[in-house]
Length: 223
Image (cartoon, rainbow, N blue to C red; front, side, top):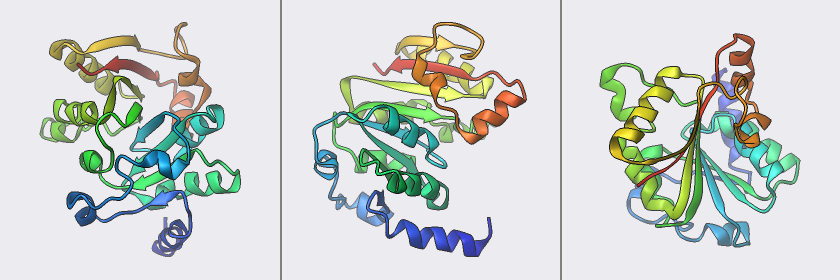
């Protein structure tokens, strides 16, 4: 993507009412006004669901279309990517989806304890090299961050084409005593996967399927 195109998207994001782009300083200082008050933004008391590393926002928008009585927030540091999802939501009149531009490691600064019902992690970078373990979105430190903002009965979803990420996460969950509700090594080949897992396909997911790569899924609770 050219720099001019990126700048155009950044400027357009600033005009969207469904996009929040707080500074890191604002977040760390505790000045983010919507923390604990996201339902005021959505103007209802519906459950709040997050998509971490939302990319183009396809999953967030797809979920919002299918579940109008739930609020969805796509989170990514790359605003030029989720511009597409934000624009689609505006064009289609979807008022139950928003986008937050920030790093995932700051998530506790944007949501209050127990404010979130469910979290999706869709096709994250598996960070395969050992030195990159701290950046994996399902490592122990990240799980504890998620636990703080999730309701007591809240749960997580991991959907990935990376068998490494699937295996790493499953092993960590069992090793740390978390509750694995459902796990599937190939959701399009094996029966029993929740319909929502296969009903929405991102652009890259479609490419993975054309390459016959298995799409894996884990639903779990953090203990």
